[in-house]
Length: 332
Ligand code: SF4
Image (spheres, rainbow, N blue to C red):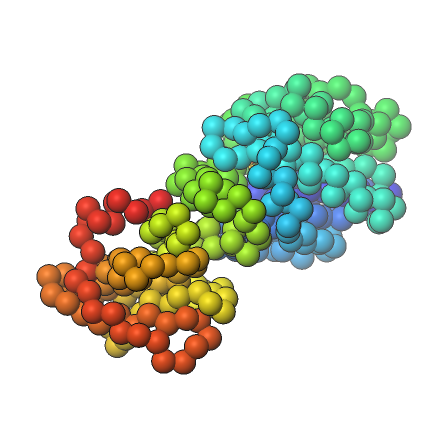
């Protein structure tokens, strides 16, 4: 017997993976990485997914979602939740992908840590059914944590899973899952903040800005969205400023030839990466923003080195750091 377990690395899916492993269901864990860069929480979930599969001796398949995922989020057929999150289409997309892995691996069904009523858009009965149908997986998705509250699935009918695996948890509480985690020895999992970055208000503003000004945006554009402070300087020019040394280095790594790098040399502070077609005044504003986030006198002029990534030389633009008012006019 082989099963696919969709593993975010959080509490619920980690419990399901442990249940599957301990009950001899031959789980193969599948972990999805969204194309918005791997920082903060996402990195924690990823290492937690790696950690638990290693502890249980379960194979892990990491899927890095790419351009086809980006195309899906641009125009989701089932709409969005409160923010940019297209949960129904996203789940259908990921289940279709898992279905392919299931068939490649010769697995019989898919298990998830979904809990009925835990998330408003994608975890009520009608949505679960719609997602299953959309992915062509009717009866083949077992959600053990809420199984007793859901229609009977093929694995249950066929007797592939025992009753001890079928629970009746529902809603947003985590108490029962925590007790189960304790029993199963599942620990060190990050607590979810209620969804991915697309459910976050601030991130949604950024991605809406990107989709509005660059409707044909790519994975490469999207990967910038989870890092730094973002400024819409003109309809065709945007700048991201690092919030600390780590982000400055990451931004520099992610910059591509032709991007404009803003840097105040020899002073601790923010590094900026601008992308698009800036006019001279856009470069000046970008430089002034970088001045604002650097350790310099806010009332006097300073040179900021601005150069195309990959070019040598560049130009020193002398500016007074931007005021709060100037920043809020362009902050995304
Ligand atoms: S919260 Fe994010 S990752 Fe989860 S289903 Fe919704 S859009 Fe997809």
